[in-house]
Image (cartoon, rainbow, N blue to C red; front, side, top):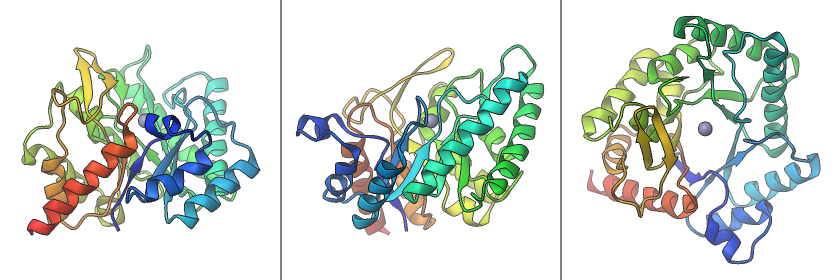
Length: 285
Ligand SMILES: [Zn+2]
């Protein structure tokens, strides 16, 4: 089944007087949404009982959960202490995900730093082998980790790099952030064939479950010569990418990704809009 939902809580959710995330699942279910990404972007600080309460409410409203690991993870680091911490952040994210009943941990692979891109990439691959072993040791086998395509040119995580990372283990599922790919390609995603090229690559290189049920982040995005600048909203029509060409392809190819909207402030509203666009395209088949 294809899933649509927000990353975090819309401004309107708070404006209506809600305060706690545990309240968001019935709120988004009323909008027809069925997925939600919980952010540990600034650290994994969720208490066990809160995680259980979130998981219970999400399940009661048929909302599938994923989590986003801390933004400061950089698997390309050459410093042993930082590398150890990265493993801990991933494991903490995975453990909290398990408490909630979430199966996917999205993370940012890393940045190049002072070494060559090739050296940084090799470091990331080594760290991913360790991460999978670490999760297995911690009895977290059923949690998948999802390297995300990143928006800045200096970051490791273009489409080919993310696909290579996924080849390390079946439990590494691609998180295709189309806004980021658009930004790092300076407005690269416009026509249906621009999107088709990405989906074809997933099919040819990974195939199976991961080419059909991959993870998606989608938002409009502003960029500079360095790539990503900031996330925008669907109302800001001067920014791309447009979801319609992707929706056509997803419908025609019967793909079932988890689509998370990362619009700034209107993530739930824009996720609902994406679902509507997808349903219109599906009805035209
Ligand atoms: Zn991200």
